[in-house]
Image (tube, rainbow, N blue to C red; front, side, top):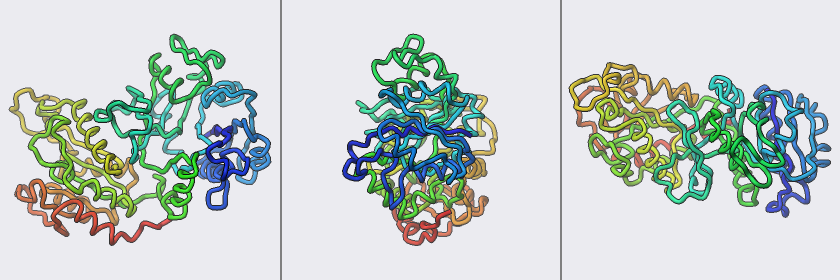
Length: 449
């Protein structure tokens, strides 16, 4: 793999911390931010790194040398004028390989870059955007994707209405094919019929233009750690996250225990065949419970049977809108989940408007293991130490089959459906009560992986 680091930032907002150095050299717990990035690149198999420098280029070159201390082949290219994040890359294209990672020099991250690059190669996309859920989507650029993971729309901040948008934040980490950028004129910002005045930015200029021209952009969603450290407040938060071990344990190359959450009756009020976003209401305390589980170090996967699709009560697009509503309601209370996994099937026929191709006995409908197995693959979950929280006996039976411990909550069906005889390990009144119990007893949050 090859990587490009955008290392030309002046760091005006960090001037009191940088001592006149460029942003990538600001110290985080005694070490330059750039050192963390170079170590991560080497760990995940990158051997060629190009630094695109502007302000403070000499200081960056002095710190990095030829990259041999990290066993990397490293070179610096100094831009002669401010071309913007994408403009600098496009200007350097003659010296870059056919495919490369793009990192911003003012971000702290711990991402399994091999997994990201493999997803890009498998997708066949012209570019792949690393997307992640966070607790402040209102001030972030958001990206919509289809069920196949390809980008359908990009929504720059600020947002007039968040209610219909997914909590999928463009985290400014990309894999890009050089061929996708060769159609741009760096001086005019022109690509076919799209035009941008001034310096070119990936998020606001290049990717919308590519999308509008019919290029395929892939959205790679992951809960891994990536944060901008470009202000004193953000820098302090990043430093605290490094010190606590949060950054070290976030990568998907490290298996982590999870809490699997049922949706209806556990996270949100049970309304019976919920089929519209306006019907979605969080149960009191659910967001706080999810936040507690995350702070304790668990990965969080929502697993839910959604036969409303097979029954014809709701389309796949409609379910996506419902899940957008869930994520935005959670985000208002600074909570988010790592992944949402649903089964759209239903084995019984005879419903008006049903979708025949979805009416079969599948392997993902709870209590079968398909949704858990998918979450384990995508989120690298260690089932040892994992839990499942739900309101129905199908949830408890699923946990039994998966070999994990279960908690029944007394919201929703409260276990009164009688479908299975499986017995939960514990019972609590609400998700918040269950989460409080698990968070207080979590014994792995400081593991470094």
